[in-house]
Amino acid sequence: MSDAISPSALSVSEWAKSCSDLMNRCEHFAAADILSTRQRILDFSAGRSSFSVTDSGRFVGYGEAHARVGRIDLRFLSWNCEAKCETATFRTPDHHVVLHIPLRGEFEASQGGDTWVKVKPGDALAVSTPGVLRRRWEGQCDLLNLRIGRDVVNLAAFKSSRDTLGEQPLTVIHLDQSLALARFIETIIHDLNSDHSTLSDAAAAMHAERLLSLLLLRSLRKQDGRAISDRSQVAPYYVRRAEQFVSDNYMKPIDIEDLATATGVSSRTLYYGFKQHRGASPRKYLKGVRLLRARRRLLEAQVGGGRVGDVATAVGYDNKSQFARDYKDYFGESPTATLRGIR
Image 1 (cartoon, helix red, strand yellow):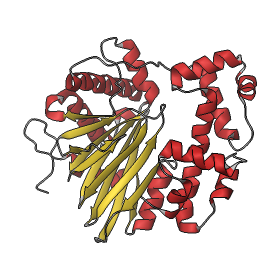
Image 2 (cartoon, rainbow, N blue to C red):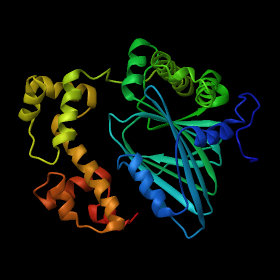
Image 3 (tube, rainbow, N blue to C red):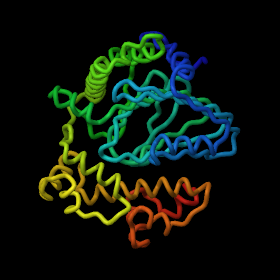
């Protein structure tokens, strides 16, 4: 308990206890073995995250609690182990913005390179850009994750011309220098633990998600010392409709004309809509969806067995070699390496 957040300027020494109390009020999960933990992380991340233990130290258990306030997703993760652990999360351009806040213990994180940043209690790691985020730690680690829908943050940025979302891969926010953000997070936690939650009301939740987004943007600007740009606002209906069509039909042959027909706009409009709001062409977006689905299948097959060729076919590839090339370009490792759990 000695390494919990200092109460000095923040009054957040009880965050860990308050988050732990969510176990009794909200959706929760507990596991005492590595395989169940790995499967749980795979499930709640929709195949985007994997978990590994990199030495033979004792793994005692894992627990989590989950709650929502509008489009803010709160997840309290509690790791109890003596081993060295690592998670890897593949983020796409439309991925949510996330704050990783250690409440007990510390971790290191890296995205897109060999440079690792250390995040300790009293800090919050803000992640907003695409790429593979790796997080590693050893020993007990209690972590609060706040995930905010990208459309919410982009809307807040659009309404506040001075504060916009950044392009740097990782930003460490010192919460004692961003007290408004810290205290509002604390307010959310306490409200969720109350018998009569104010934020369970839809209108209150909408204001809460926008205020949290604005406070986050201001904190990022304060940490970075400059305004940083974001090219997108809230995506128009036809982009979202195309995304849903891809999600439902990625295993079938799809071209941009199919998407245009499904959305009721021209191929040209669809192309420029995706480039502006998703940072990729419709074809590239479809490829990303297929590869993310493939990665989930391969990670699940580590336990149950499977073949790369079968996975390629299941996600819409008719050429195994092309699938292997695309997969390695996207994730930085071959599908065979993923299947065998090689890091």
